Length: 225
Image 1 (cartoon, rainbow, N blue to C red):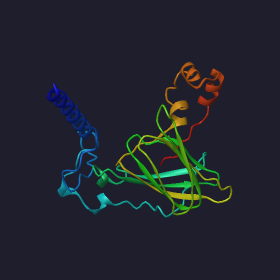
Image 2 (cartoon, rainbow, N blue to C red; image 1 turned 135 degrees about the horizontal axis):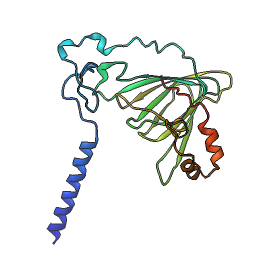
Image 3 (cartoon, rainbow, N blue to C red; image 1 turned 30 degrees about the vertical axis):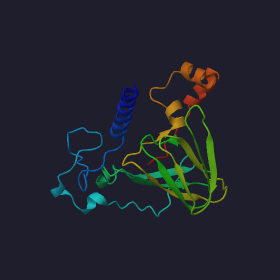
Image 4 (cartoon, one colour; image 1 turned 90 degrees about the vertical axis):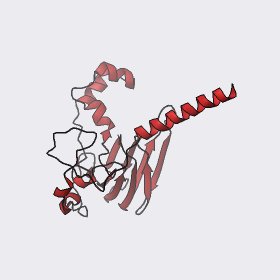
């Protein structure tokens, strides 16, 4: 009886390990897999260019990340360098972004469905935070100064806000995916195309439908470039 129980536990453990191995990103099986933008093959990621056709420019982009960016309506501008800008990032599981914040600007609450983010403040001060998943929904927050670093775990809602009314701020973020994705909460919920039913949203947010209709009528600007 004891050996039977041990066998069942072992099978369950091996199944869990196997599932986790499948669910995680696989390691590269070659030095690189530069994106072949002309390939008709659709895969989870991008098909590889013939290694004989790869050159230095496949691993380079003149991004001028040292230059300030013009911020938008919410007071920020995210300049993302991912696999769409540098084909050599394909399969390497990493990307980065420069984030500019106007005085009192913010990178509004959003998630990266495929990446953990580590952010470093280069200039100014940022108030940052993230919220854990249900049911706890615990809020972690911190005030960061120049040189400080914070981590936002994969998939969790997080934000950054520049509390200084006079000076801009700048941060650089590294993300653990070649294509991390970004879902800005307000844009996705109130700016979807076609719109989500106001009956659904009114019940979800416990407000009147006219409030939802007003929110859906706003222009939800995208600050990710």
